Each structure stands twice: as structure tokens, then as C-alpha cells.
Amino acid sequence: QVQLVESGGGLVQAGGSLSVSCAASGRTFSTYAKGWFRHAPGKEREFVAVINWSGSNKYYADSVKGRFTISRDNAKNTVILQMNGLKPEDTATYYCAAFSRNIYDTPTGANEYDYWGQGTQVTVSS
Image (cartoon, rainbow, N blue to C red):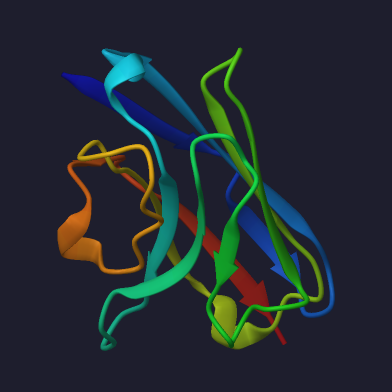
């Protein structure tokens, strides 16, 4: 089993920055790509960003491209989502997810991920 724990959420004003982290424990050697998703009340869960196992490939949702940066430190089993230029529409619960099926893919679909964290709330005030 793999456990994912997010941290770093909070309240920030529009235009501000926030960093959320995801710490993995357990059978972490069995997981490869890591993704971030978000879920706002009344909306569908949304893909935000994904990074492959080595960190060489990263993909972002159009809504966050140029503002958010995903990175990982495999030695520390940690994935970080740096969010700059935050907007009120970025308000959501942010979830970290781990993909374990192969080392090559960088999936953007939530149903492709095998492990999920409990989420951390990010609120952006206008």
C-alpha cells in the first residue's frame, strides 16, 4: 500500500502564491507518475498537473499553465505544486495521486491513478 499526505493549503489573496506538498510513504517504489487534481464544490474533479517518475516530463491543465509548477524529489518521496498568480477560481480541495501501472505514462485521467491523498484546501480570496 501507498499512503499520500498533502500539506500546505490555506487562504491567500488573489495574485498571491501558495505551495502544496505531497509526501508518500509505504510501497513508494511501486509508484511512478504523480498527479495533482482539484475539486471545487459544484464542479467535476479536475486534472491540474502531472510529473513522470524522473521529473523530465510535466503536463499542466490549460487553466494553470504558466502559473503552476510541479516538481518532485524522489529521495524524499515528495511532490510539490507551486502555485503563483492565484485566482479565485483556483479555490478547491487539492488532491495528490500516484500512478503505479508503468514507468512510462503521465496520465491526466483521475481513473488511471491508484492511490489518493486526503486533500488540502486552497482558498483564494478576491
